[in-house]
Image (cartoon, rainbow, N blue to C red; front, side, top):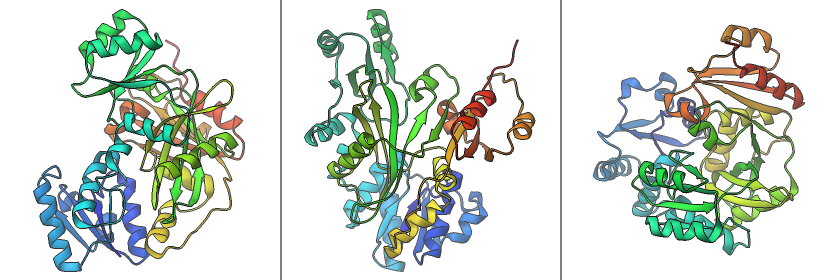
Length: 388
């Protein structure tokens, strides 16, 4: 297998994908605009060859890079970045070079929230009322139908950047002034717990492993209020959520990919889909998978992709919690005290790239235990504010 890994240096832990691909027998070709010397030595050691372009947004350069790879190594079998930002570029390259996977015929349905909603409905899943509103008049007409509050978010967007909860006319006017110059989808505000259904499917669309995240607060709240957040992987998934997740996988015909689906669990226990992401969950969640299942998620993925070997885990052995902290918040425990006090639970900690800071913090801790209660107690203590 010849695999082109786009932007393989970001985020830093993604070098593991290249490593496991190479170990599985693939020819691993890196393609990015990052200088070779700036790549982590561990990544450089994994790559059969690296091609640097001046700008990954220049499609002509990307085509020339692929032409070079094909001339040197033969037809390309696989291209990916595992990154939402490059999803459309990947699709365009797959389409133009006849590579299996998500192509330009699929891309709008998995990038635009309005298109996702149509797929959910076609699969018989209940969704929040919403539509793309292009003008203030459209927006006001929709709000007249559903009433306040509503949620406004870019129809194409990652995370909770520039999303708004609008509860009255004055907030609506502020939204018109502050919104990005892109299409926004306006939805009735749904009161429920946001949960995820995440995992990996093989080439036949069968689940290799799956998990679910629970959050201390909404990511939109953490971004808009510039506060911190923690979240954890559950050991058990509600049957209704798993059924909805499996229906979503079928509706979007997901194959040989990671997935990260978001849902509401409503007060009556029913499940309402929110959006799909055809990539792994962000931040340190891939490492959380490893600590939950006691396996190597990168190896599981690579063996599935290269050799069609399915390494299914025995089960979710631990709850695993991510606890984020932001530099501008004063905490009662400093880093040394956190590491000393909670060392029996902490399995990993690191400074995070600034790209992730607004949503999940400047530094993160991973904690695990067979029981949830000690993790919640530790998470709350790690994020406890200093008394002023």
